[in-house]
Image (cartoon, rainbow, N blue to C red; front, side, top):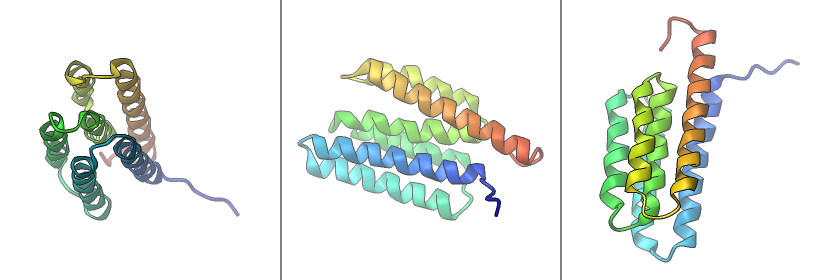
Length: 139
């Protein structure tokens, strides 16, 4: 029996891993309520993307939520990986500008944040080209 692997399953996996990473940062830090609210909002938006085909501009809601929570919880800067990943998966390569913005706005762990965002962006680009190879007319 041959199993056919689709790129969309990896898209869901990466979104879940990004949320799990944020959850880990939330548990490690002392600010319980603030991080939970942000992760809850991002999880709802990721669930909406999973269930419905929504426009790309809704990724900016993720980005705005992360930037609004930045003065309250410094770990929220890692949430921009979701916006970066959604942009790269959809072929919006100008989303790469979120990497320098994130590194500039980060107060701690700039190198780790840079590599995290770069890896998420590269994985998103790989999944975009994989999806494009399977269905050339679907973007």
